[in-house]
Image (cartoon, rainbow, N blue to C red; front, side, top):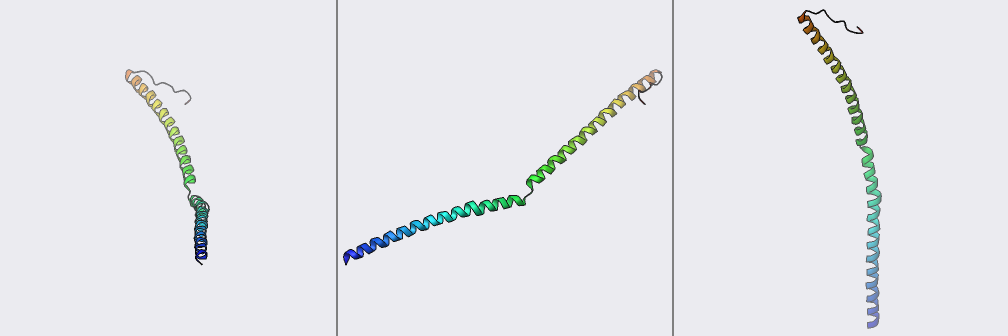
Length: 106
């Protein structure tokens, strides 16, 4: 009778260890599944809802367009400054008493 109790106790302990091991393994698999499937899917869902990349592209296009407009305006300013220089030379010549110069093309 004593031997049967010991063998039953050993079987019970073995069974408990086996259950704990299987439960631990099952919990690991469950957590891994949650981590890889749900969190990854959730992360992808969050990024699909944001428009960060589209906004960045729109900002880049706007900056490029503004830079082109600024370059055109600088060319206009350059031409205006050249006209001012020509007019100032005409004023100096007028003060000296020379006749007005004819502009080419106009």
